[in-house]
Length: 343
Image (cartoon, rainbow, N blue to C red; front, side, top):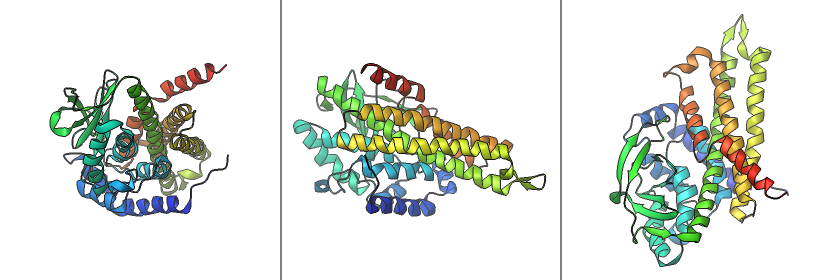
């Protein structure tokens, strides 16, 4: 199979990178850590004006009508930039669920929420009953929540939130209390089982894409520090041990990236192996990001442990997302289970 991104997809990524370099600096991320929500509504509005917030919203509801293959590069770039806004939850998870929601209830949900998402006025949080806390629940206008195998769409006014400790200060966590009802039900039974399985695969792939971007940024920061920091009269980057550490981390990222892209393609076209590919992507991206974080910390030495240095902003994102939607161990076990069943 030959695969490459087209010029429009690459240009969209370049536009997001240019935007982030101006509007999402390390100082802006630090401001987000100390803000009420952990992210910026004005920046989310600007992303909507670029078409990012509505990229997966169908055209008839004011969006661009694109799919996960068009989103994967933006998610990777969001990780690289440290973008704190709930892009993954809203664009890659929430909107596709609303687009696919069946029946009359699905049409009601689409009419009510999709135009506002495309305009930048609404964000979505997603939670499963297996999750102790829901990321970005505070500030979300709509929450997609699983309860006893059914999927519900719950407006923010119908939930009670209790903040929970979060490793990444821009990825706020909250315990959500709510009551399911006929008015909140999106899909149930066997149909819900299928919807939730696809949702989990999308989450694994999308989180993997963000992790690849985070890992890329960590390695870039470490490489720059290795050029600038000198010992014994020469840059530490000239030492063979440092070179090998950085090269090992970079190789891990470069191996994970195409696996994530393949998973995005598989999910976009409905490939029968999409679940397998999503788990492979999440496992490899989680490993790559955690190795990149460890390597970057080793290269920076003691300064890397300090709050004042920007390194921790990306390290904590890597650690948090590596565990989200299944860690590397659980996804490798799933890959083994799927492949073993075919023997």
